[in-house]
Structure formats: C-alpha cells, structure tokens
Image 1 (cartoon, rainbow, N blue to C red):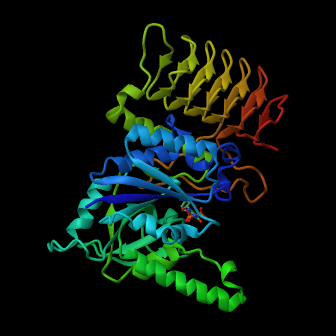
Image 2 (cartoon, rainbow, N blue to C red):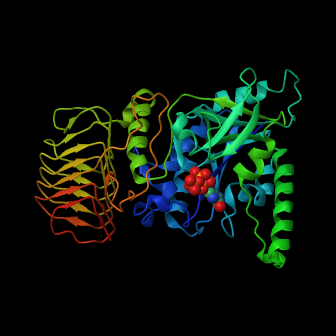
Image 3 (cartoon, helix red, strand yellow):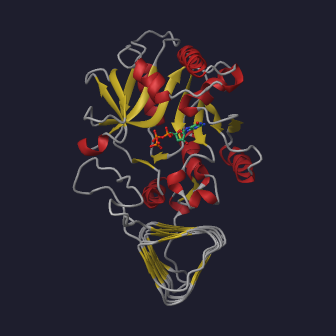
Length: 431
Ligand code: GTP
C-alpha cells in the first residue's frame, strides 16, 4: 500500500510575521541551512518507505517561478512526485485537503501525512507510521478509521500558544483537544504533523456541509460566494478527540514553529546540527586555504569566502554571496548574492538578497532562543512592539537590495527592502 503527503504551504496573504523576508520569496521557500524551508519537510517525507507523492497545497499563483523551479529540482533530486495544487482562495488548514480530495485519493493510498509548512524539525515519520499501524489492535484490516497526530512537550506557560492535547497515558488516545486555550489544558502540544486514514474525507465532507449551511444561512449568499474554508484544528481535531480514533505520537526531537524571522536562526542551527550526523559533506570544513570554521557552517559552492574570514557557529552562506577578508559571521543567514565587506561583523542577523554590508560595520541582533533553563521551552513568539510601543529586541534583518555603509553599527533593527541607511541604527524598523 502506498502513502502520500500533503504540505500546507499557505499563500501570499499568510506569513505576515515573516516580513520583510516574505516580500521577496514565498515564506515556505525561505532558505534555512542552504535549503528552502519545505525542502527539509519533503526530504523528511521521502525517507518513509512507500511514500511516493507529495502534494503542496496553497494559494500562491502556479506561475510563481520560484515555486515551479523548486518543484522541478526537488522531483529530480529526491526522485519523488511533487505537485502543486492552488486553492482558488485560502481555504483554511483543511479546506484545501477537501477540495483536492480526488488528487489525494487517486491510487488508493493507505493513508496520508499532512504537514504544516511553518514548522521545522526532525520528524519521526516512520516511527509515527509504525505507531499508527500498531493501533489497528492486531487486526490486519488496514481500513480502520484512524488518525495520528505528532505531539511534543511545551512548558505550562507557553502551551496556550499552541493546540493542546489531552491523551490517555497508556494508549495515546486523544480525549480532548483545544486550539490555543485561554486557560491551561495540557503541556502536550500539536506539532502540525498528522497521519490520516482515508476516512478523514467523510469528516471533511460533514464539516464542509455544515460550513456551507451556516454561512449561507447567516449571510444569505449565493453558493459561489459561500465560505469553503475548513479548519483542521477547530472543525476536525476538536471533534475527533474522544472518539477512539485519534491518537498522539510523542516526540522529543527538535521541533519548532517558524513564524518569525528570528525563528529561522534557531531552525538554521538545528538543521545544521542534523547535517553533522546525517550529511556531514554539506558542512564546511577547515582547510589550508579556506576560512576558519567554528562549529556547524554551510557555504554554498558558488559563494566566495576569503580565507581570513571566521565563520560560525551556525552560519549559512547562500549562492553567489561574497564574504571579505577578516569578516566575522556567527548565528546568521547570508542570502543569495549578498556581500559582506572586509572586517564586517554579522551576529544573529539575516542579510538579504543582493544587499551589502560595508567594511568594519557591525550588524547585530538579539538572540531569541528557547529558555535553556526550562525543559521543553520553545521560542517565544513575541510581538514586534512592546507595551510602550518600542521595538522588542530582535534579530537584525537587512532586507533585500540594501546598502549598509562602512564603519557603522546596526543593532536590533529591521530594514525593509531597498532602503538607504546612512548612519548607525539601534532598535528601529526602517520603513
Ligand atoms: P497563527 O498563529 O495565526 O499563524 O496560526 P497557526 O499557528 O495555527 O497557523 P495556521 O493555522 O495559520 O497555519 C498552519 C499552517 O497551515 C501553515 O503552514 C500555513 O501556511 C498553512 N495554512 C494556513 N491557512 C491555510 C490556507 O488557507 N490554505 C493552505 N493551503 N494552507 C494554509
């Protein structure tokens, strides 16, 4: 029996907290550790035996060249069927799955994975599949109605930012599910990764009908204007909890949401760490004529890095980027064709496409890492501004095509694309 995977990639209207980076590239294609965010998810899926097709569902235009090129490359590289299906409007986290049900059901797969595209991690999909199958209770009938979600632990305080799962300790059966509860429900949270048997379409159909009836009743709209959106979390998981059909598989492996630019620095660090054990050939090595490398660093083959530069830990340098003599880079992502001039220092920052940082300039952000003293702590999803209207300390993001002059300091600042900077800046958004 075959398996498929659906990745929910959202659309141009989503990912607003990811700006200004999503102004230049669809958020799911933002490069982390040298690969677009969703490449890591697709690669993870490609490791599951029997999984031979990945459907990307979103509302980006199919003419989006970056997406088309990406799909062509991934198909070849991972020898996998990868297809993009465009929703006519954002249909919510389950509306697209229902709308493209024929495409998902074709070939009669045993089950299919669903992954949110704004999460990163080392997902134990094969183990999750094994667990899913084991819940058939020994009967070899593969058609039992069964749904498995991936869960992880969060701190009590942070859990309310996520979908919270209450399950039976012995069996993992989900008895209660609440999306972003106002009061404490559980420290087990939804990772946005699911495995569904094909029966899910019955529930989607019911949710769809219900939505159609209620919206047409409330708004008295003709059918073409009715809302076809369905929420996986609100319309399905909440309902399936307690039905003896929904189970949670726990993981303590690396997992994080990637809602903000700051989260990409954390994701970059963790994906590079995975390379260390699984793809060490992707990591830069210290060699006689090369730059000094500290810890995990990715440098694209076409990037030029001066042999006196010092990089790492946790740095990714993209295609065609140039790093000058004596430059120091740490915990940062340098995007395509960016130029870091001699002796510049880049810390906890993202330098945008075709931007340049002048000689002796320091670009620095504030790390936003999970609290290392609190077990299961996640990245804090902060608002851009604090209660006094001041910018919360954040990583520094230099948007695309920005020229940062020599000998200045840019601290905790977000610079939108094409902006001119003439002097040092601290805690600012340059619009
Ligand atoms: P926010 O905190 O508001 O971002 O909510 P959330 O964390 O629950 O995330 P959300 O439900 O908005 O999105 C979860 C995933 O589904 C993300 O990867 C989105 O890109 C994707 N997604 C959200 N809405 C849609 C949609 O209408 N269509 C598709 N195809 N994907 C979507």
